[in-house]
Image (cartoon, rainbow, N blue to C red):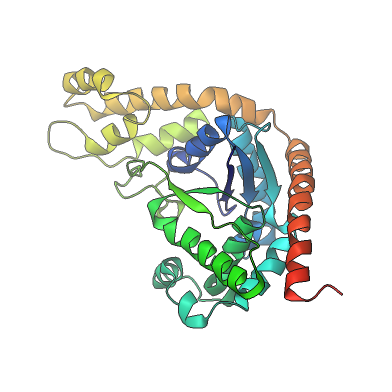
Length: 312
């Protein structure tokens, strides 16, 4: 029997090549052979993003990114979290089943607050909204990185608490730990992140790619330039790159120019495809996806409402 996948993307910024190799590419690969849901987590984004214009823009732009990367719309239902109100309704029910000490164990909450993010209540109860996201659809498998494993554990716990209190209702989903992608270094050698302002834009123009790559920090000692090489390995294998880097061991400018050409050659077909995707195209995909997702979610909530006693 086919298993249903559930995964999400949070529209909180312009995507870069680190996002592509860490999230977009693995998701596109999964939906080639598997069916399920890809949710734009716009309500989750509200925990940190307070600019409504930016949220709208990133929602449209990030969906374009996934479409340009080749997500299979035959297998993936793409929809906005906010278009399916059953998510927040079920999250409230789960909030009433779990305890504050239980939520205080959340690694993501503690990590984000430690990094200076406002400790708002939405951030604190985030795991129960994510549990609702997952459990509404009788999800079998949730692809996550190792650092997000706890979110799926929380979803299983929410399912278990509900099932004990009200009778068997929810499946307990399993995480699928995605193969770790080597940390993509940014232009300064740290992990590529928009918060560090060290990114290479995923769908940037060649001029933008050139500007970013030429700013990559290099070791002044003779030899292989690690930051350049680590980025280059995403686009070419070691057998191809070895002789090139050996031949130009003392010329980082040539190596950067080669990297620019390889990144641009890789991105160009997707960039061209993306340029032909309009905002209206995205809205159509999201509207159709919302209708499909809501049909599943509303049926599940009928059962939940009856079981908790709010249906008369």
